[in-house]
Picture 1 (spheres, helix red, strand yellow):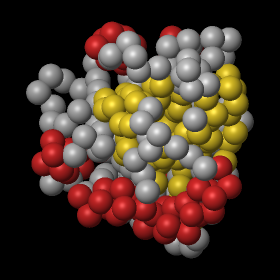
Picture 2 (cartoon, helix red, strand yellow):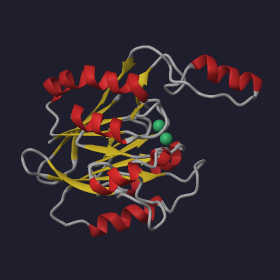
Picture 3 (spheres, rainbow, N blue to C red):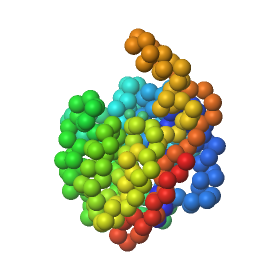
Picture 4 (cartoon, helix red, strand yellow):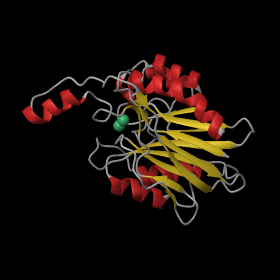
Length: 256
Ligand SMILES: [Fe+2]
Ligand SMILES: [Fe+2]
């Protein structure tokens, strides 16, 4: 199986980049499943229902979440109605939506996709390590393909999660820091991992935002309203090849 995982989509430039690049990526890499981190898809912060529907219509099979997922309260109803739109699993009990879903490829192979939030230099969340253990324990043992989006700030926490899941997940992809790291690899027990998948958005920016505003904020230490950077977006993420029988990764390729 081929799985395409794309990093945080930053607003309209990110969505337009997906619209432009996804057909070619499909042609070249024939992904059986496309997973997209969508926490920034609406204006750069949050996900609203129109942009969620737009990304699904563009060909995303599952949208994963992050610290900004709940910015628009209208998303709650959509998440409750559509299991393809995830929020981080390790939120307090009673949080709307779901943190894991099982989707089937066109060939009928089930794939579990899970969204998790880190806790280092982040807002409070439940333990992502114990949360993912509980999620995996709840899965039908027939499901061998598991993709985890670990939305976290600290490199150490993201790498620790990859090792925690080595042999139990197909892919552990870091998101949230928006800069693709050069460490895509397969761990000894067959889990593909990358510290950060990167961003779908304007590269000439600070994490997808207008650099002039961010620079001014750092220089002056005054509050500023962030705006999306203007220009053409790029698409970043990774492609994973898997062993259909075991669900373990056989190859991983960064895409930028
Ligand atoms: Fe993000
Ligand atoms: Fe984030």
